[in-house]
Length: 153
Image 1: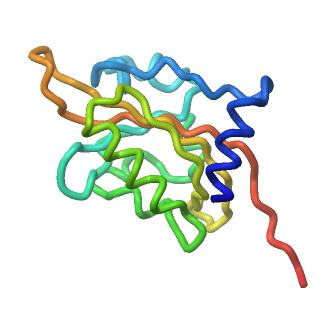
Image 2: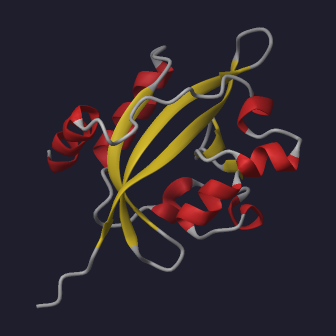
């Protein structure tokens, strides 16, 4: 419920970008041109659309946000970013909406960086299709909407 409220607040906050031009093809999401791939300010990761949704690649902005190098995440699923405060229901719902045909689904969740620090994340996902229109991958853009500081008792 708190994450749903944060999603509404983020959408109403003019200072937080909540609408993204999602890549539609694999090459748009992860260009072969390394300079183009790594100069994109959007934190992009691409996953398979079957099984455990293993990640196939990311860009430099995603590496900087999450703390993992691309070579560390290929073949792993996104649970490496999740923990006890992650919005599992919201994530499942967003993926289900994509399978139902929506072109973009957003959810606020708590993600965990490689170093264990947490951040609130506006996750915007969409489908990637091949030339014949078949769903082949999912693309996600992560937007940090706030680091979470540990409260000392």
